Image 1 (cartoon, rainbow, N blue to C red):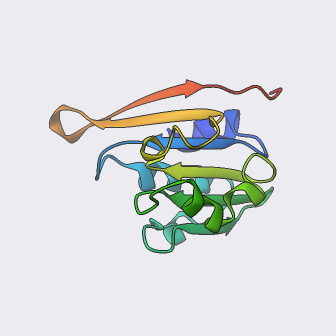
Image 2: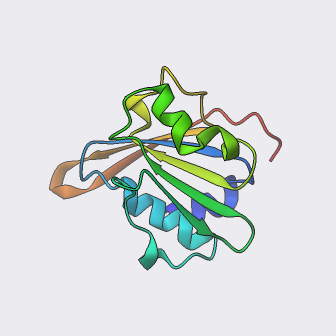
Image 3: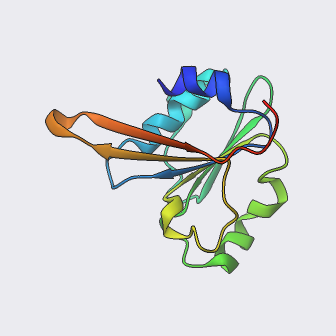
Amino acid sequence: MACDWALTRLKNGHVVGLIGELGAGKTVFTKGIARAFGIDHHVVVSPTYAIMNVYDGKLFPLYHLDLYRIENDSDILETGFYDFAFKTGVTIMEWYDKLKEELPRPDFIITLTVGSNNTREILIESYEEKTT
């Protein structure tokens, strides 16, 4: 699902905020996006301790951030977020809801929830203002 969605909707400069409890599938969803961009999804791991991983895609880079350990906007500044977000590549922010009041609104917000029988429910909200 993530692979098909990414191929049809994500463009250079887009930012995606991922929301979901621990184990909801945020990193797995990111792996699907990476796969769509020609990145070996096996190398995509949660950047919980690194804060950000960068993967080189066929067309543009994929920036994968984990905001779980980030406390405020000054911590975000230290990651270099504003140097690349909304400019080049695609930026994926796990735990976006943790700092959504301090960050610019992304182009898409994706909420993943665990449903019955361990299924996943995915809600995609688009705030895309760029031409597609």
